[in-house]
Length: 287
Image (cartoon, rainbow, N blue to C red; front, top):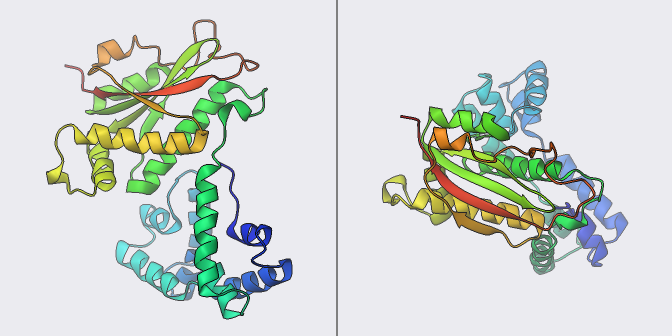
């Protein structure tokens, strides 16, 4: 989905002029501090450690504080201390505009409602993507978006990959599988594997329940709902969830999981993508 910044929206809708926006942003930037800046100011990280965390974030899709904790540079109490200081002093753009007399509180609330309503309705349409974009790249992009969203939602990475490499992962744990199927002049599948405990955490947050309150069917339902929301919002398509049988490792290796078909191409780059379907099933350890 294309990102449209709130400030740009305020100008487009006539809430602010360019000069007013610039002044509001200047006030906002003078008061707000990044996590790393605050960590240095509070003596919890050195500038060199901050640079190390930023480098690590390129391969670890976690917020700055969680990445620093993952690297062993700070502990959880320190992360919470910095976040608390950051939240206490944070100035939102709308508030900055109110402080300078450019907008009223009521106008900011109304603009926010309009902004998010438009954001949620402007998902990217897959067929509208450049015709020379290989569709396996579309699938990979969707898969990475879903994976990142799961990390941000519950803070735990997932395993995913094309072909039998993904199937090989299944022998290591019980979990849930999400198959993403593309339909064009040829069909293909790609697989997202989610450990059962992570699926339960997703379901708990989606349904507002504690782990002990979940029934045996709820983890799969919660994962299905979560992936449907992410995939549908990103693509602009109606996403159809399919139930599937339990799949053990011997059967999984024979599934058409690879992004490449027997001819070596999932869908020719010039062929319009017609649709995609999500399928969900359980994965169990071999033996």
